[in-house]
Length: 227
Image (tube, rainbow, N blue to C red; front, side):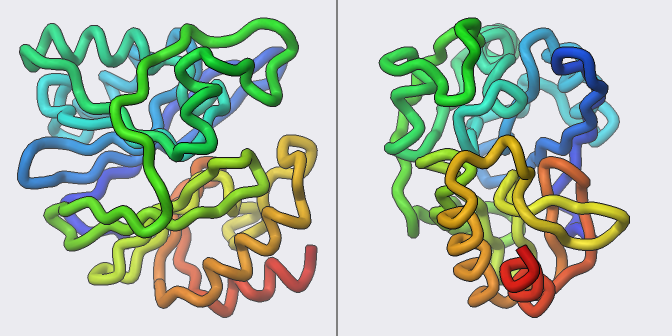
């Protein structure tokens, strides 16, 4: 389902009193591995193990793209960056959308925080929609998908007809489903974002909650209509 240069990195941990399985993604690029999201605080070792299962290590990580500010996506970024810098000799570049960067780097408190937060992490490059990364699977375009957070982004690889939806979509019972209810403060905006994704051409989707699924724009449109 995924091209040889894109890896679904499955992590299992605990968030509060619930077990949480998540799916960061790693994409090979001409300059090194680009990691899409990290994991909860304390999951760095789990991420290292997931990279090893994909035949990679922290020394390969040249960049980290945060799809948004939530702790299961950015929580172990500081530890990851420090260890990757030790392994690589230089820290990976960190990217986040301009609307979510202040929540990641400590200028603002994460919008879903209950007072505690993960360690603030520097954002090197603030993204906007339409930014394109050069990868071994072809161009990867940043698509603004706000609603789950103000600066939530998805990533689209048109050559591979692949959508990395992060939390703009989920997978339930093997099928594409809407953004996580209860964790999406602006659901109407989030569903507008799903409609925007339905304008793209894709055959596979990786959701942070649910992993990879065969799905098309018609499935995304159906999700937007049902919710």
